[in-house]
Amino acid sequence: KETKLKDAIKLFDENDVGCVLVVDNNKKLIGIFTERDVVRKLIGKGEAILNETIEKYMTLNPDALYLTDPVAYALNRMAAGGYRHIPLVNDKNEPVGFVSIKSIVEHLADYYSNDILNLPPSPHTKQVKQEGG
Image (cartoon, rainbow, N blue to C red; front, side, top):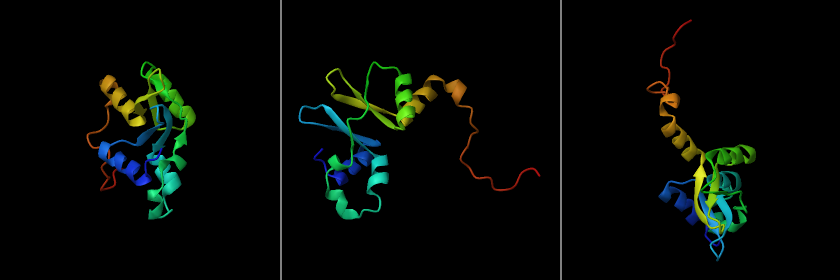
């Protein structure tokens, strides 16, 4: 919680993640700081704010799941709470990772690849000329 905002944001990029889990001195989960927190709470506040600590801007006591919980639990919590990331903890409430919307989609795409991957070869290309009437 004493980590500066600029250092937490740097961790997003260095580790290709969208959140940082925050622990207390006993390594217990006490918060989560996400890219969404950056967008909602920091944009337009000036550069000086980046030297503040994440404690003021993180979500305190976030919902968490255990590694043994089914993926459906994560989807339910994400949908109900509007979350994109959910911490994963052990039985001592120590974070061991997190699950994200991206990781769930990747898991489902791997598991149900034949059913899900029916997209055109280049789904993000722009239509250059008009087709039809």
